[in-house]
Image 1 (tube, rainbow, N blue to C red):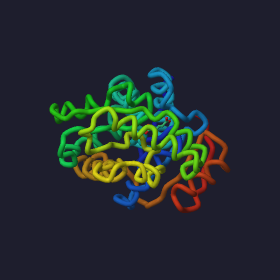
Image 2: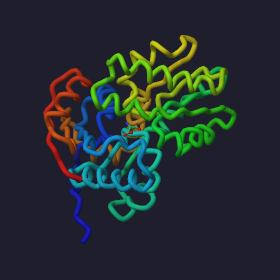
Image 3: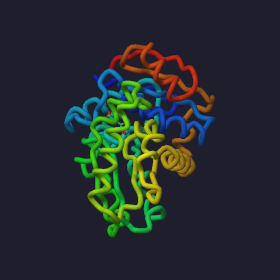
Length: 279
Ligand code: DGL
């Protein structure tokens, strides 16, 4: 039997496979501090980047359903892999049956919308998980808006595990940061803009900046997604009214609570409390 979803206003849901979505959440909260948020990290099953389409879709749908049951009317997939592999299916197959008035938004479209104002050479590189690169979502979305821009992608399968295992600042990480950057740039010497197409990657930014040539602009998604959400809420007052405004954020993880507290506190530079849930 279909479960009745809460109809009263609720927080905005922010979902990621792990800690990466915290880089988006912190920019969203900076731009829109008045709203309430629920952050859900599926840390027990991260990474998603190497998983099949079917599994990423199944896990993402479980997370979205949970966030709806917790009272969210609007959910942001703060995860490129889920945005690439599951967003369209959730929007077209599931939302109409679950509740056609609820909304799920991704992070790829807001990231590419302004890319033509950043690149001069019109040659763009994308660093992302294997799943996102294989889905071709970045070239597809960019070409819908700017058909003349050349796009090359490089999968960075080890970056998410390094971040999830608190190795973002570790010495061994340098090797893999440099390797994927060099491999991407070797594909096209005209690349002048590189999109960090995974929400975990800003946590590696000091090392990425160390190895990215100075003439190349590195684009992180947080502020772009935050601006786009601000604009969305402005254009959709009916959704804005369904989002509570108390300035609070609650955190949920599918992994052990102490592990999340330790890592999330480092990434957010503040102590957070978290509850473990099952999806
Ligand atoms: N942070 C995610 C992304 O933006 C997912 C990484 C993963 O779980 O592999 O793609």
